Length: 182
Image (cartoon, rainbow, N blue to C red; front, side, top):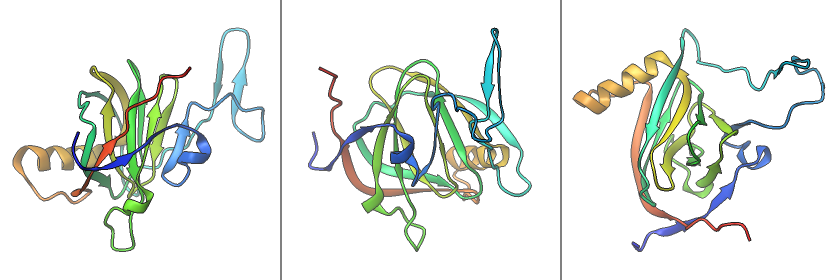
């Protein structure tokens, strides 16, 4: 373990995540103007209206996360689009922070949430983030903006300057070990 400051991992709730975006996978709504349908064969309801930003095309990606590193030393953000992540094969740890007035990560808002199967998160544009797994690879469904994905790939493969995303180093934080329920 390094000398990095501790970062506790919280259970994901809609109220706890609201500063960063929206929790997905909440209980079935009981009306309240939410478009929904239910019969013996199926239920469906509107969870969230995804916003890619002006002129953006939505894209569904499969993402395999493998980093189980407990140290968080960098964050990324996407400037134009929301980004949704839904774990399909295991839980993930989603680390998030709001942007400070100068656009850098506001480390006073840095938080980590355990996102279980059956849940997901949708981060606001400009939400700084990093994703970790407990042990093994986790496959996630991601909803994002097509041009943001291409912009990030160019940055990560040929070191092109990104225009729709930013990645920055932060003073290292150490995720606290998860506590199992009693």
